[in-house]
Image 1 (tube, helix red, strand yellow):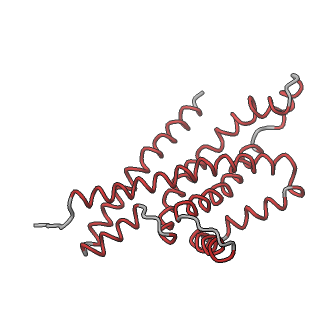
Image 2 (cartoon, one colour):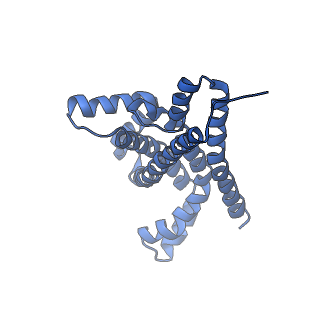
Length: 217
């Protein structure tokens, strides 16, 4: 018969870690999406040459592994700039920029997918650039970008497990702490995976629902 030393307090500890994962992910995805939309539209609007500096910076965040970014930013702020920030703040900053780099590429591709004929028709009706973007381009681009954006959000949630390196006790770190104390790695990792599934599944299903609904409109 299987026996475990896991208690209800330990499950609550894991739930708190899952809550921290959700908070960090939500902040990074919301702020990263806002920045990503701005950067993506900017890159589309000004063209590749004028947007080259922004593109270069975004490529840096897409190319360097997230773990290295967390370590470097944390060390740079503390050792070079002498700025003392909490691990939570550093994690949110890095994850936000990391998310914005990928979101900008998603937005740029989605905006470019809107047919030029549609945009010319909107402008011929007297719509300003702002009205064109607000009422024509962005609604159409959102449908194109949604599946990739959902995948990005889920990816950021899983990547948030790396923020343990800056002393943030999220879900995986909480699991590691319990593994050290209880010495039940397989069982605890199974519970950790179940927590991740419980968090991820509704998001993925909701994204699929929206995609299916919009495709039938």
